[in-house]
Length: 473
Image (cartoon, rainbow, N blue to C red):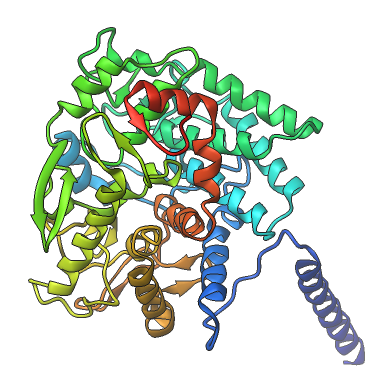
């Protein structure tokens, strides 16, 4: 009996020491970010720090261990989760259902994670050298992974680097997702611009990817349309031009900025400006919406993905579009709709607003006034901080203090919630978490805007497409 007790005590002691050592190491490791709960009576600045830092944990602590890529989400996703969205967007009603799986990494989400990593280094949450090692891990993986004329797929297996098909015909290059990736990589190259061996190595890797990416391939050899997808098995059979106004303006800017394979201004005009639904000009709730064919503006990610890197302030084009007006007014219209709350959903109001694409009790939905099911995505209001800081802060405080026990987690806010349905997501998506970190930072310091807008190739691309900006000489 004494021997058993001694052994038991020995095992227990070892376990306690191991646990204590683990906690001590975590505290001593400045590159390990500990999550925090709801903290009362803090300043607005401290609250923003907490939200940005905890949201960044999704990319830092939940990145794929083999590749460093951003996982698409933090639950295993069945493809049927996206079917309604895919069927509507791509008109493929007969897609066979499958599983993206736990290894699924998002190429666009990885670009947003890279931008978030720059913010993390600049704010001192992780060390510069440690972050650079992570970025080198990512580019070393990508340089050997599947790509098609230098363009990457939508989803990728984080172990093998093989394409995970997004749909029956969408099993190859995705030019839009690749533009988000390249926005992140080019910004990181601009930030990690020193002469140390690791920095020079990283710069060279990014430059290799930048130079071989053949954006013009997606024009099918003429200047009529820029196509979203290409597949070695299905060619351009997806037949989905990149037209807008929507989240893909950055795709045209990056494509026009390419050092070796740029698209033409004529292609931009034909496929984007003259495409279906580019111009609007209507008023909603007293706000003029310059662009977009959605009534009341569509989902708010239209004003967030491109503008993680592109500063809309002072940005105009040769069609007399003011992009500061576009981004702000779309956001104000979206909020005004939620305040009006014509469908009388529980919770909607001045401090609870924001319709955009994300998870809901119906699956993945591009929520907007035309597609409103009573689901609020926290990313919508929080990624709008540069446009509506006062209103976004109201929403943030409500999400954190009032609803935090239901939606606050180790990776920041859960992806969505519906008080009407008493439904609160447990999921986090890379493409929703990334804009929170980056756009709050652009509101606070303009860091990512300043870096991206000063890249010489990007400046050349903006000029080529007819844009003017205070950044352009």
